Length: 214
Ligand code: PCA
Image 1 (cartoon, helix red, strand yellow):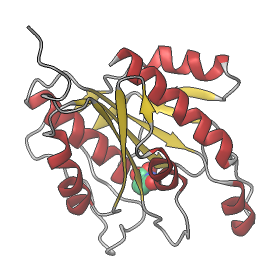
Image 2 (cartoon, protein in one colour):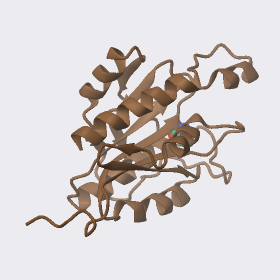
Image 3 (cartoon, helix red, strand yellow):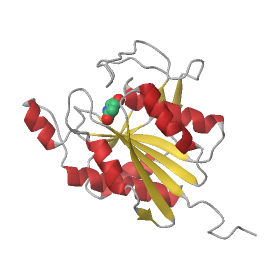
Image 4 (tube, helix red, strand yellow):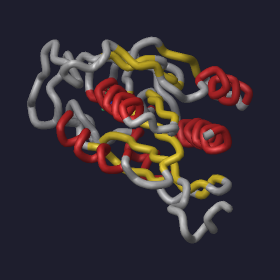
């Protein structure tokens, strides 16, 4: 006998983005996560929130959410300036080695995300299915083999580590978004960008597939 739906916590998908960092006034990943908060996907609801760009604070924000009953999957989002396409990250490594300081001015040098943790974790989201769904809808996307060694990698690693430790069935992974056109305009640099509406559509496709397959 399965419990009636009001006896169990609603199945939900955790979607996080980050606050702006490195002097930027905006971070599209945080904006998209905020926009999707509360969205219904079949029997699943999105819990969207914005993480601080500091490793302990980001971890403290995510940790209790990974223990929440009804957690179906985790999709972390972040900004990756220089990427031209939606990047589905394949792997998180146990390294923090920052090229730029975090939002508290701290610059980690060759530190582990989790002391004693395994060298790396693969994303557990269905990456090939996600790329296929994005590309079929005309959204440029690919599977990336590095999430860097900054906050995004650390957050992906921390989540996959915690879920693996608990043998939690929720799938998890990380999606890097390109710069917004206005960010490139403001920088005056020769950089690729993606319109906000297309990024939103991309993440909607990702969470839609993840909700169906979680
Ligand atoms: N991107 C950074 C950290 C926050 C963000 O949005 C990264 O790629 O690590």
